[in-house]
Amino acid sequence: MKPDSAPPAKILRLLQPFSAVALIVGIVIGAGIFKTPSLVAGISGDAGWALVLWMVGALISIAGALCYAELCTAYPNAGGDYHFLHRAFGRNISFIYGWSRATIINTGSIALLAFVFGDYMSTLVNLGTYSSAVWALLIVIVLTVVNLAGIHASSSMQTWLTLIEIVGLLAVVAAGFWVDAPASGALQWFAQAPAPAQWGLCLVFVLLTFGGWNEAAYISAELKGGPRTMVWVILASMLTLTVIYLLVNTALLFGLGLNGLSQSKTAAGDLLGLAFGPWAQKALGLFVAIAALTSINATMFVGARTNFAVGSDWKALRKLGQWELDIGSPKQALTLQALISMGLIALGTQEADGFSAMVEFTAPVFWGFLFLVGLALLWLRQADPSTPRPFKVPLYPVLPLIFCAACAWLTYSSVTYAISQKAIHVSLWLIASGVVALLLLRAREKTVGQLPHQI
Image (cartoon, rainbow, N blue to C red):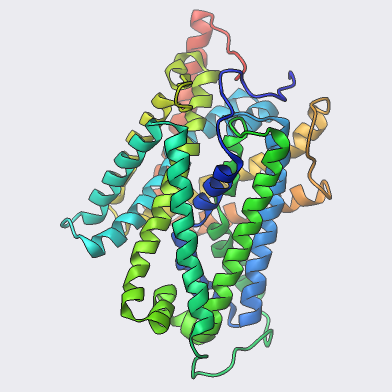
């Protein structure tokens, strides 16, 4: 392996640090924070332990983010996870990941978030039987056009959307401390610890709500300021997210009480209604739609980078590896991503709940490959010690091992949750098709005598 401490020359560093933080925060803060606090409160059965569970989830996520900080600064590349797996385990594993990300992980996440956007927009303007799907298709098309306009248009919109989203969450926080305590009685703090199984189930929801911070890997080659700035961007993003999530959960507990929170399906909306009136409760739908919109845009931005990396690594797919220097964007990769996402939205219309179908479709594959990225860090420390590492994970190897264990457990949990559903079988078939595609690509390279080049 040759050291790769600098990004490819053809990619310019155009992304500002503040925009990078907004991008990461925007990816992570989605519809989950409006849904999961009620579930965690109800399962844990105690206000104090509920907040502890959110803190534990934050610490696991920060451990993973520190692992990514080392990989991003040692191997900055627009391919992100794909590039790390390529260097650690070779082209075969990295290609299967790139295929899975293009057909399942990233595009499934876009479709999932688009359904959330469609559900809430349909409450404002109903477009018929398939209203949610129509809204989902429209937003995928619109945001793809924005990203095709270039990195400046996409990152600028992302910054403003993230700020609006945070204002909405701060309104929930203000409402929680504004309203009078619920009549049902005082909160119980650490009166009874949850059972181990309850801890596990709660952390599934908490870590899914924190999910998305790993996308920072895809902007490491485009960030102004270089590797050390990347470390601060990751840490600033995770600290911002931790503070926001803890404040929102504390406000919901104080404003609704444990019973009120655990029994509410729209806790944030109920709280806003109590504090500011019915109009504020209705406005929550707009904030949730903006949250989904923000995450879709950010996921599109980083997701196309994997397609670009695959195209750069395989000459038969070189059209995907075309980078438009004038706009700082891979147009072909973005277009392919949009087409697959729209296909998955069409698939989601065949299920009773498009959102749930996409969760079952993406989660097992996502956590499985994230586990492999954690192993890649451990392997590259031993196999590639000569590469400069501007940042090293503290408490090595304890933190990487904790991260790997959490990913392995979430892989198992998500598989057991989805195994009886049709969507996960579609995921498995798509991974199998990736193996077939890999064999065909290798056969073609061998036939024509083309040698791969490093991305």
